[in-house]
Each structure stands twice: as structure tokens, then as C-alpha cells.
Length: 153
Image (cartoon, rainbow, N blue to C red; front, side, top):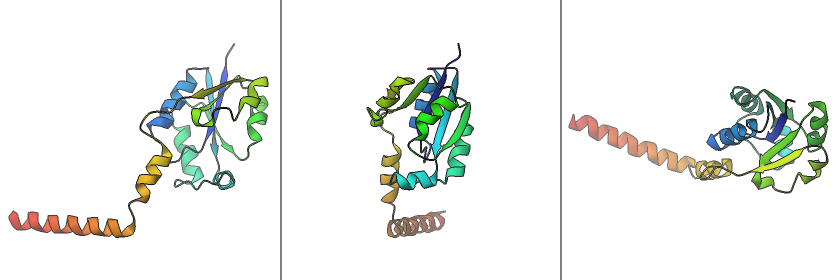
């Protein structure tokens, strides 16, 4: 009997960690549904994605492991989606460990390990260090180097 797997996430700044979790989840069933959090729901969760929802869901839909991508609008949706899509397995990153154990009355629940060395939070932290002053200083340095190369040529 075919197994349907579902997961949820923001999938902002899509990276190899996201890809790895989708690949591992696809291996747990025959069909993978990915619910991508809308910008409005992310605001409720206190998150501000860099990439807009329509682009994030388009990226997720293009991943070969994903059979269907749907919007996630609220916390309660997880329980209703399990019934709506006849889900057998719920999987999500281990940073949510224990938060969705209440779904175990309906589905198998898996918390998957993160990919070492990569996270959206860390990417955002690194990017936030590139403020306008530093970017302008970097541009100035590159312009100076370019001028020196021209003079030496």
C-alpha cells in the first residue's frame, strides 16, 4: 500500500540542508507533500523570510523529490492535512523535536537530523554582517584594485 509523507517549513534561502531533508523524507514513502509557510503565517511565527512565498513554493515544487507543494497558513493545518491528504508519515527537522508528538495518534512522526554546517538562520546571520558601509568599502577596494591592475597592464 502506498505511503504518503508530509512535511512543513519556510524553505527560505533554499540550501543543501533543505534538499537533504526532502530526500530523506521521500525515502520514507511513495509520495511527498511539502507545505511551505506563507509570509503571513511566518509573521505569526515571528519570522521574516527574505525570499517571498510565491518564489519559495515554486522552488520547492521544482525539487524532484517533491510530489506536491501546498501553502501552510496556520498551526492547526497539520492535523487537518493528515486527513485531507491521507498521510501516513509526518516528518520535520529535529529542531522541532517533541513539538508534534500529538500527531502520533494519526501518523508516524519522525524528527530528522539537520545537515551539519548549514542553516538558514546562520546564512541570515552572515548576510546581516554585510551592511551598506562594509559593502561600499568593499566596492571601493575592488575599484582601487581594478585601477592598479589597469595601470600594471
